[in-house]
Length: 226
Image (cartoon, rainbow, N blue to C red):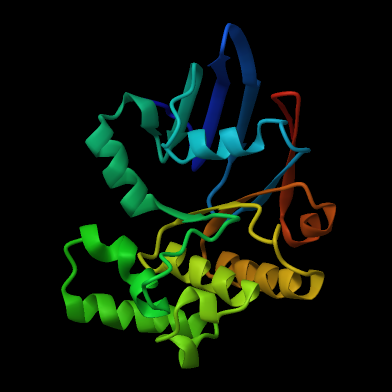
């Protein structure tokens, strides 16, 4: 077990894939730490290993080499079930493509992560309504995703990510499909969540987003540069 006091520690991380007869290196070698309460952007061009790093960090993608520690837990020493429990308790995921269920309302989409928590339906409803208000969609809780703008769908995705009050939020290009004004609004919301104590790790290739973060880790050719 790691004795580090950092919230997150990436040690000698590497990830390769097999593509036909070729071996593709998504992550060559990465070492860095992230502390509790930081807002960190991971920046790099497409294919630089950013999203692979985020999924490995999120207990979704076992690395070929190295270790990922969160709160002294060695993520890939855990069983599959233990990692699922870890994700439910520790992590909120925000995806670029939103990944909302099209036939569920805003409220129903936001309640999804609570299905495995053991909370009562009354608790789930109260917590979902609370985050709907937080992201500014109080009047749209009964709408379906295709009745919302792109920015509103992103707000639903953020609400879904934070409804279980996870300490860590992982965001993969959350402003990638939004116009610049809406992107600033979303980044303002993420900054507000960070001020409230959430540690945020955001993958982006947009240098404009860097100013919202407390620190940037640059990724190039599968290597990290703090």
